[in-house]
Structures are given as structure tokens and as C-alpha cells.
Length: 259
Ligand SMILES: Nc1ncnc2c1ncn2[C@@H]1O[C@H](COP(=O)(O)OP(=O)(O)OP(=O)(O)O)[C@@H](O)[C@H]1O
Ligand SMILES: [Mg+2]
Image (cartoon, rainbow, N blue to C red; front, side, top):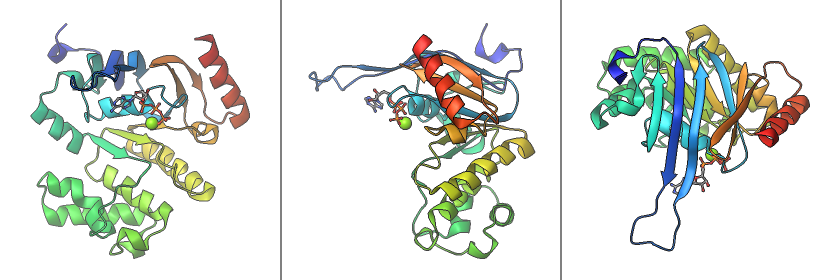
């Protein structure tokens, strides 16, 4: 089967995904690191999903590959009907701008731009009409409770507010997939709770997949399923929505042990 004739309708499918980081040949003292050793993942309904696993298990690597920020060594990644593993460099640029929203632990806002300017930046880079973009950006920021912060620069916003701007920025081009890597790592527990609820609502109201890497069982309890990564492979997954966080952590550990 060639990538262009893929006929099923999975929303997010990863097959036998492998990635080894190889040091440049001049630094022979360093050894290659296998970050992903054959990841399989299948999500066929929109919603909020989590990836958990110990430090170094390959979570960020998986998100980077899905976001088109780096290339796998082998394997397949399907987002909707798109074969991400088969995209050319120029197709990847468009894919990153139009189909993917990314939220990192560091908010990565541009310090010289205000909240609205940061929000619409992906659309500006994609040369979309400015007036329309500004309208969309304004509406998004209002929906996220930032109506009176449109012209504030990042340094004058709280951590929670900055992260909401980062979410508005992730949403401005109406992506089909949102990838979040420990998005609440720099937030207090109140702002974290608000953010998880926001991501859950965003997935439901837009009918898209939000895939979040987290270390926190409380966060995974907002997600319908949680995938457990161990040593670069999926050790298993849990129906996690509404689970008691202590029980969730226990089950996650059991899965990782039994793999
Ligand atoms: N650019 C890189 N070059 C070499 N090795 C890397 C690189 N990025 C990650 N690694 C290695 O690949 C493995 C997986 O890293 P990754 O960042 O995906 O882990 P993670 O699960 O996100 O961990 P954490 O929870 O600490 O963020 C680790 O052993 C890491 O040291
Ligand atoms: Mg990481």
C-alpha cells in the first residue's frame, strides 16, 4: 500500500515508529541513543489523550516527530488521511503551520509582541489575510478569558495567562491535532487545573485530538485514554477519564512493569 492510497479513516495512527539520535561522526566518544524502538498508537475518535512514562522514555521525541519538527528513521505516522512520514520538507512546513498546534512547557511567546500579536503569528507566517486573522485571534483570546489582555506583552502576564495565549496561538489556524508537552510544568495547581479543563473542552468542542505529555496523574484523569511509554515503546494504555489519580498512577506503574 502506498501512502497516497491509504483507505481507512483513522484520526491518529502511529506504526512501528523508530528514532535513534546519532552523534555527528566527529564526536565518536558519544554513542547513538535509541529514543523510540517501534511505537504503535491508534486513536480513532476525537478527544483528550495523555502520554505518560518515565523521564527518557521517548515522550518528547514522539511529539516532535508527530509535529513534523524532526524525522523518524522508519515507521508511519498518519494524521487524518495525511501520511506525515512521507511529506517533503516543503509539505512539512505547511503541515506544521496549518494542521498542528503545539503547546510546550516553556510558553515560547515572542517578548516584543503583545498577546494578540503572539496569537496570530502562525497565520501571519502563513501569509493569511491580516484583518481576518486579527478577528479570529481576538475571538479566541476572549473565549480564553483574556479580553482585557489583548495588548499586553508576555512579561506583563501571569504564567497561566501566558499559557492561555500559547493555546490561542496553537488554535488560530484551526489545527486537526494539538500536541502539548508538559503544558502545565511551569504553572501552579490552580492554573494547571484550568488548563486541563480548557484542553478537554477544546478537544470536545472542536472535535479534534489533543495529545498531551504529562507526569501528573491528576492531568491524565482529565483524558479519556492514557498511553504508557516505556523504553521507547507503548507498554499499554488505560481508560483514564475520571479515575482516582492514585489508582491511575498505580495502574500506569503496573503496565510499565509488566511490559
Ligand atoms: N537531540 C538529542 N540527541 C541525543 N539524544 C537525545 C536527544 N533528544 C533526546 N535524546 C535522548 O532520547 C531519549 C528520549 O528522550 P525524550 O526527550 O524523548 O524523553 P522524555 O520521555 O520526553 O523525557 P522527560 O520526561 O525527561 O522529558 C533520552 O534518552 C534522551 O537522552
Ligand atoms: Mg520530555
